[in-house]
Length: 368
Image (cartoon, rainbow, N blue to C red; front, side, top):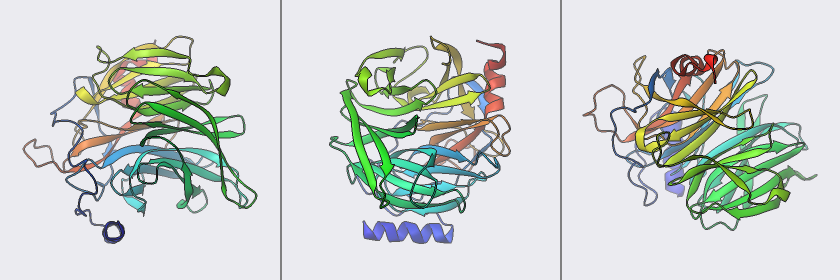
């Protein structure tokens, strides 16, 4: 692991993205090469540099931070689940790499109080140290510092998402066996991590993608081969749940992977990544009952290849510098530099999609 970390750190410093080798059994991408998805086509607006681990299932999940006081200041986080945590700017350039091992999913919440002032709390599921790896992003410098690990008794920490309930910062981690742990995180007077488990339950089978709607106090979670579920964030609610969509279905082809929420004015949209057909189903979820609005596929455009075999997805509504109404970022399972399908695809990265293009393609302004 020391050699792998050294290799990755050196490559990033040099701006190179060569292979550093494979660190575990996941040596191939999650799905076969697919030319394009079957959803309504939406053009890709940009992409990040590929993660340094090549010829492996590596890039996994993104998260977006936008400075509420200056929306031109943006950090995109992305995990390399063989090696660590990347930070990118909106041009897709690597701005920081933390060689922290097998990080799978990543999420964040702003305004986290610490003895040294408010930071951005960043969390990632850690399959090597068996817990949630925690980081603090300094909004002044845009640099991220490792904080520590909140240990969990999951068989293998896999999916992760974060939420806020009042002043409480919540981290939810699920495992490959469908077990879920919900905990609150705060900084002690000495700056140390204080982690308190709030509840635990079982979804049923392997889960990964999840996202929290802070305003409604609910958690959406993907059971990869079966469904998207909605749970309450309230510890007293236990494991009561509602099914949002089944899989396989006309909306989703397993695996159900990443989940994201985007707020656009008075509307809230749930976006899922349907790995089996490289599409992104969308529901409006601000009402009592979710309303399906269609699905899109991120297609090659602007000199960037399209998205195939997608994994994690995240979204941010409102101004995100060059994206005035919002940005969607998703993992691309088989990145290429050009558009030729015969190209050997060993690299993975993250693609950027303008929310305006999604709204136009799916006619979201017209309903539901």
